[in-house]
Length: 169
Image (tube, rainbow, N blue to C red; front, top):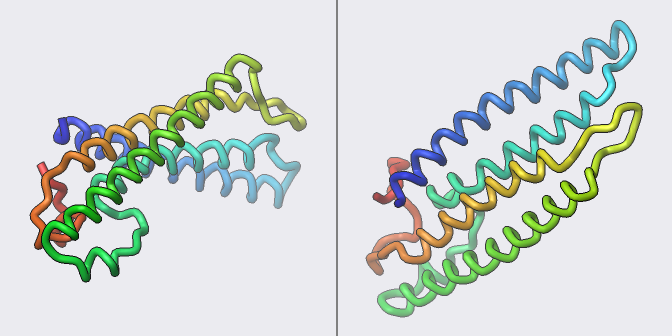
């Protein structure tokens, strides 16, 4: 299961990189157009949508590689079963938190779809497609936290992949 999720995480990471390029292009075109003519409507809003998609699609890969911000000083001082217990508790709390966030994002996306939620302005941009992409990202993030929860851990090893960047199999 982990290798399948890793492949999806790598694919979404590549897509996110291209989306960042798209976002920078949108903003560059908007700035150039504002300088020489009238601003293009909805460009800033679209770049925000792209940024939200990039963030949510990247959460799972960050979790897979242990790249999220964490405070480890207590875990680093602990040894043996205490260390394993602390790591398991942190993983359990992460899974519960991500499950709650997944529920919130999913219900918000569904409500946005039902009401055809959009950003109002000179042009109306629907929000619900972006929110459903966020649900996809949260689904993978939740699956990755569950995989991490049940990942075996040697008490002498840190709770993240090796320094060469390779994830566990």
